Image (cartoon, rainbow, N blue to C red; front, side, top):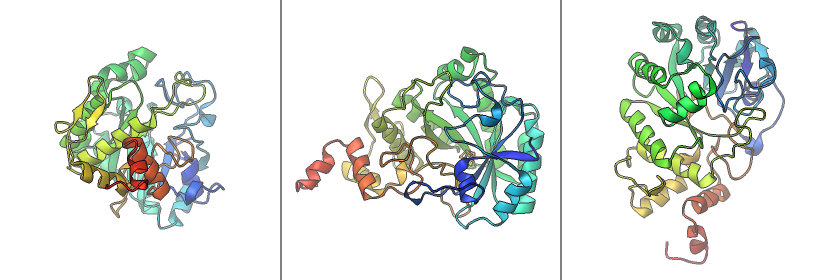
Length: 351
Ligand code: SF4
């Protein structure tokens, strides 16, 4: 169990040579995503989560964000990180809701920093953090944290993580830790995990991303992707164009090209206008970058935590590209966002 052992996402294990396999289009995982491991697992019961207490199965075998997490000793993980390929630029420890977790996370952070010399993020569990834990994490060597708000509104948070599922999490506590995190780690070193497809409107998600950005926090987007056997096993993924619109909105907000105030929405909260001239909007879409996974950056300023295929199955249509979309994928994205546009151009439209 942790702190001597940790679960490693299958994609990370493949990048480090700990597990065998090949990924679609040669995708690589640039972050070593670790998850603490305890026999008793997580005490929370989030409706969408593979690790939820009431999801059937042993913690050891439970999938998380839809992928397997094989267990390795920290000695073996550190040895593999020391021999890592150059594209692996960060490690992250995901906490769970378990009282033993904060102290062990510190110990694991210290080892990763001192023995493997790799930047470390911690995906914190606000519910089990005590006063001083965030500062202790920074002192142990972590330079970024993630806070999994996950839901866009307090009502949805309560429904899927709080009282609605007899869970221990509270919206106010998550915000308190997010604000404390900004004080301890500084602007743009705190990422909020946000999940699209939980019943929020596009406008609610855009308003939240705008608020976070103006506080100094960045949005790390996920799409809902049902875990077998979880309380929401039958819920579909958000429609692809909806997710593309939210990704594009995040990009234009964080690149300071637009804001919630400059965008317009219909009566059901769908984005009607991104607040950009249409030719600029199209060139931003063609960059492909807005649709790539968002997560903690590596020292090179590029996204390290690119979580290949954590949100969808490998295909040309992806709910987070772990690499820059190619021409075929970009054409599909453009068609998803501006239906008819690609066909018009192919037929010799003026552009
Ligand atoms: S985005 Fe950052 S905090 Fe979140 S899982 Fe990735 S590395 Fe960890």
